[in-house]
Image (tube, rainbow, N blue to C red):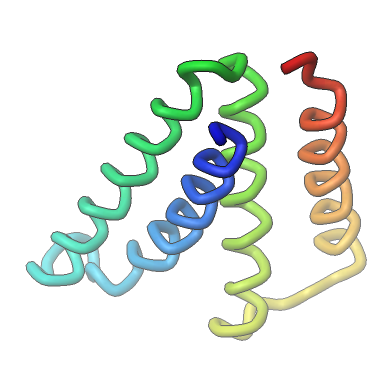
Length: 106
């Protein structure tokens, strides 16, 4: 169950990462409130998952999901450039997430 919660926390972190820019340096009240809410939910879910998962593994997977999601959405939505180097970095992050999960004793 905590692996599922960790996955949801990672998805919320992706949403949080995308909510930062619309705050316009935290000058827009509604986007800023949404940004803070998403951050709080992501951290709450992460802390819940850490009740039975190793801290290092949970945090690495959480940030990995967030990083991959932020890059993918940046490319698809924000039209960020996609290079061979970025694709290699994404594959290494995804590989690290998978390796951290499959080698976890719990």
